[in-house]
Length: 263
Image 1 (cartoon, rainbow, N blue to C red):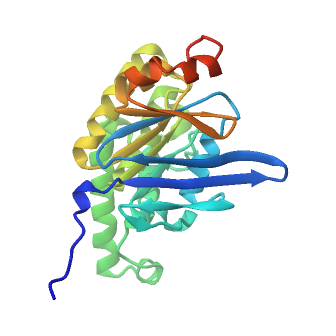
Image 2 (cartoon, rainbow, N blue to C red):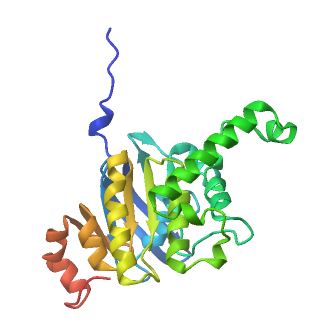
C-alpha cells in the first residue's frame, strides 16, 4: 500500500483550536479559533485586556490553556518556552529584552542558542566543532544585523544606542534563528513615524523567507498596511476575522469600539 503524504504547502502554519484560558474567575480567552497561513502576516488587535498577550503566551508555553489545542504545520504543538527555537518559533517582547552587559552582536547570538549544534561540554573543552559552530552563529548574527541596516552597531552595548536601533537589534535576534513562525508583540511601541514606516517594510519582507508573522500591535495603520488577515479579540472572544478591508467594514468591530478605530 502506498504511503499517503500530507501536502505541507496547504497546511496553515499555526492553528488555534478552541483555545480557552481562565485565571480564577476571569476568562482571558474564550474558545478562540483561527489559523495563520504559511508565509503570511496576520494581525491580532483588540483593546487592552482583550487577550492578545495571553494568546501569545499560549503559543510560547508560558500559559497553558484550560481547553483547546495548537497545531504547528499540521502537527499537535505543545510548546515549552526553552524549546521554542528548536520548533522554529521566535518572539519579540513588548520590552526589548536585551542584556545591557552584552554587545548587540552577543545579544543576537544568544537568541540563536537553540540553533547551536554544539554542546555545553564542547564549549567548555573548546573543541573544534564548538569553535566552528560559534563561527557559524556569529556569521549568521552579523548577516541579520546587516539585513536590518545596523551591523555597524554590532560591537556597541544596547544602552548606548537610540531606542529605534535597539528595537531593530531585538528584531534581528528573533530573525537570526531563521524561524518559521515569528511573533511580534507591539514592535512599533515607542518608535517615531519614520521608524514605523521602516518597520513595515521589514515585516512585509519576512514572508519571502517562508516565515509566517503574527503581529500584535496598537498602531492600527501599521496592522492594516502589512497584514493579509486580521483577528479581532474583545474580552477574550474572537469577534471578527478577515482581510483589512473586511475588518474595517465589519459592524461587530465598529460596535465593539463605539464607532472609533479599533486599537
